[in-house]
Length: 295
Image 1 (cartoon, helix red, strand yellow):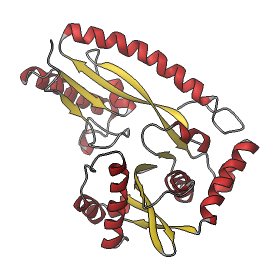
Image 2 (cartoon, rainbow, N blue to C red):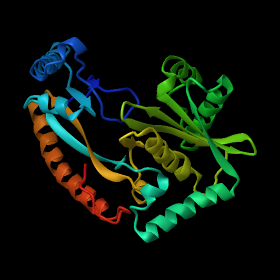
Image 3 (cartoon, rainbow, N blue to C red):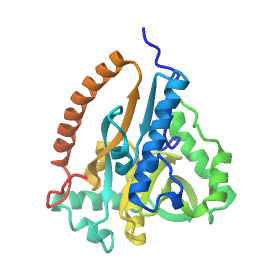
């Protein structure tokens, strides 16, 4: 058989979100042509490292499209599908819901009403604003989500505290409050023009609370802040009825062994066709009155 390990992975740890992967210093990246030259130099060094260290493969996960285009023919492109929300200049949440069909709009309003009728309200805290106790409660609640699946979380409480301390304005907690106690939380990160949903946890099961905390509250925040996109994380066709649309994501893979590479290339060709069909099929069920072009 062929050994798959060791391999090299270029990624943002624990973060299935598109972003820079071939990092070029700002003063070297001002000119597009020069930036492309440096990116190509970096990918050549990745290939050289694979040969030098006898690695089976190199995987660049969730690169930006310009980075993807800079990679050479040695790399096998792969696509996947997530569900993202696009801000189309909405003034408020009702303005957003006005783009839904009547039936879907009614369901969304009923979902939000159920949470409100449970006596639950929401408070927002940036990491820089949250108390130590609130941060630790957020960590403990997110831990419950992992424990329900039989796993311990991979980030400890000290990580939450450190992120709040060092990049607090990029960290957002949405706390669900009942009788002045925190009963659930969603943890987000704020990018330049995008909100990223990362973690969720609740003390008990409440009807529709997950959807309200993780999706509706995130959309409202994007509208209030003028953020262009909301990426709530991987998987979840249930997001579609709440306004998220299928969106292609990318990765690139270098495989050293020619026979292994040929088999994977064949699989990726067939997978790409299947994902395109899947995304097109899901797009038929978005709640909007007018069809939208897939990102």
